[in-house]
Image 1 (cartoon, helix red, strand yellow):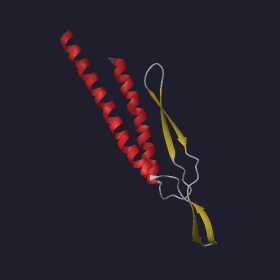
Image 2 (cartoon, one colour):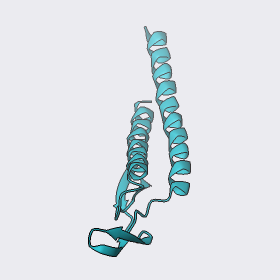
Image 3 (cartoon, rainbow, N blue to C red):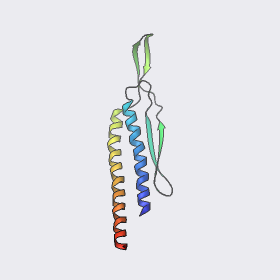
Image 4 (cartoon, rainbow, N blue to C red):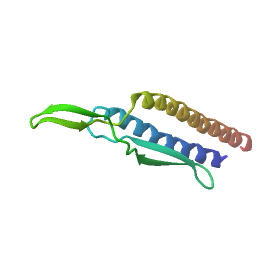
Length: 117
């Protein structure tokens, strides 16, 4: 039973990193030259989930802008809101599922202790 709690807590921590990455990407959508981060989830032995954060090195769109030095080509952020917002909604559901697992494990442990006492 305790292993179920540890596994769910590992999932909560990994999904939290994913949500933080999405939020950071959305916050920097208008920052020139910003490179989005992506979180990859993988299984961890003996149980649990590991989150690996990597920076997406694909170039952002290049835009001609007027600056004090004249017309210059400026690289914009490579963040795609059409990708970030659905990922945030999925991450929310994953977080809720892992949280529910912790709650159920807690209830089961409480019931077991009530039966034993």
